[in-house]
Image 1 (cartoon, rainbow, N blue to C red):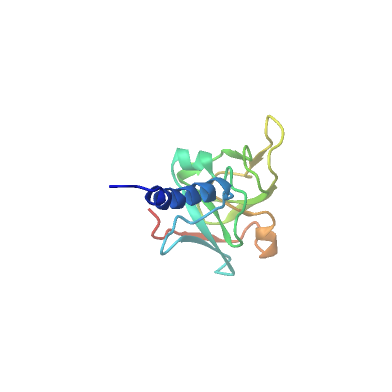
Image 2 (cartoon, rainbow, N blue to C red):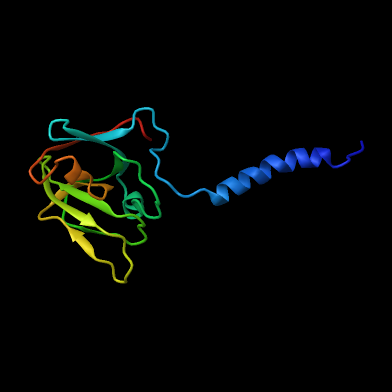
Amino acid sequence: LRDDGRVIRRLLVPFALLLVFACTSQQTFTLAGCVAPSRVAFGGARATLHVDIARDDASRERGLMGITYLPNDQGMAFMWDAPIEGSFWMKDTLIPLSIAFVDADGRIITISEMTPCTADPCVTYEASGPYVVAIEANAGWFDAHGIGSGDRARVTIGGCG
């Protein structure tokens, strides 16, 4: 068999294009390709946020770190099985976010606006009491949708694995 270079080029060109695309695309947030993504309904479905769920220590620690773009009406819900009193920070988080802390009764107890951390140590953001869910969205999202402390938040877990 004689190879004049065409066979090798046909194999390498698609690989090279894929490599270029992977190296130049910016990191964005996706909902893991779920058919029925998880969501949080606020104030009797006055507003809905589609969320990725962070239920284990590794996913809660990673959160939205490194994300350069978060689509409107998408965010992340951090969940615990029992009330906690931990704080959040914005280490390695590149975009400003809002966070709503939800107590065991399903009511928002605190909403804070968080800015990317540029100093060490990073500023921390705390709830006014124990919470079981913390929901992050684009900065100003809760205010823009008229959601505040005392409003209800109901998480529905979708088909994400």
